[in-house]
Image 1 (cartoon, rainbow over the protein chains, first blue to last red):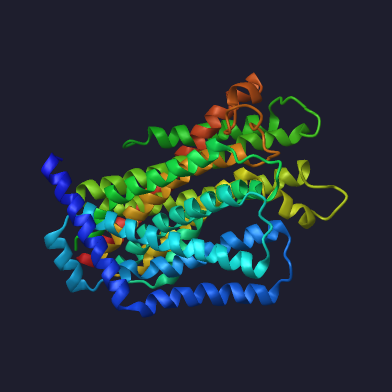
Image 2 (cartoon, one colour):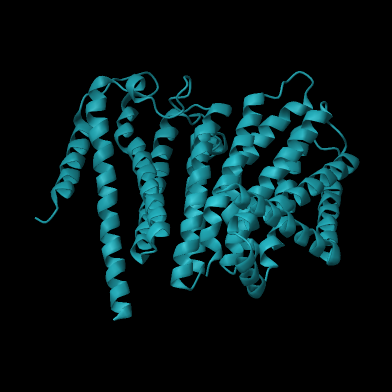
Length: 224
Length: 232
């Protein structure tokens, strides 16, 4: 790719990202829908559990992240109609399109993850011994989840399926990352345990792999 | 005898595996005793499964490079047969674990949740779930071309994430499984297996894998014939 191509791809990404942001701002119901989903789920947990154990807290937190991610990310490709996809196909490259989606969903999921962490600590107590590293892990985890499910949303949208198939496709793929995240964040509940840096780097490497795979494989998905 | 040498090899190797597996000499280690014979069956199932899954992904890649429908059929049938080998791997593993890992003072079901947490069992479960999802995705799409393309993309994506995962998980989770102390999370064939057993183990892996490929080719031929009949 020459330098001008790189610059134009970058411009396309920014434009497509702004388009998604604008759509989100105009059709606020979906954004508020996710907020309500987070609030309602955590409130149900608050009703179901009284003062959970740290391990339960950690496990529930990541499972809730998983469900929030499916709900937040599912619509990103499903909302694009056939005609609009055809239009994007004629004006932008698949790389720019998929990267803009990944970027937008990452930002959305980072926001939702932080919010759910805030609600979790409010409702279910704050057992965190190391708040800083845990927040870092939550952001990294939210990012990982959003990347995997964005790509699976693209697959589900192409297969003209609902969000249910996304869960079926995504759960086995995300299990390793969830195990890593749960293990890592377990250390944040005890003052003595260290969070091992190589494992964190492994997660970042997995995320990079997912972005790479999305860029390579998306062109095959979107032409009809 | 058109290209049948490898089928004959498969039969000969498997007959050898069964004879040596049941009658050959094995070292009688404490705890393992005669159950070590399961090595020729249980471990070979996983080897065959991984090789067949890899064959499935290779065919998916070939499909995306050439867009020839037959490669999609290859990929699907390799995945199905690999799943069968995976289930057989679980079955043989369950027999082995019930004699070695399970607490003899309790009913076997009590030990299940402890044993199922083993990282290698988790890895295998993830692999099987991925390919069940692959089959569901593939069968849910009506349009033939779209079906082939989308399922190939999922196959490659899932496989590419599965492999680092299977490599990472055993390093961070505790396990009773062999091959866990050193750096190598897979079975360390050179150090874990007695020399005379390796003489049976390697042929057994090749024999079982060839049998898997043979079954797959039969399924592929049947399915291609069906396609031809439908289009004719």
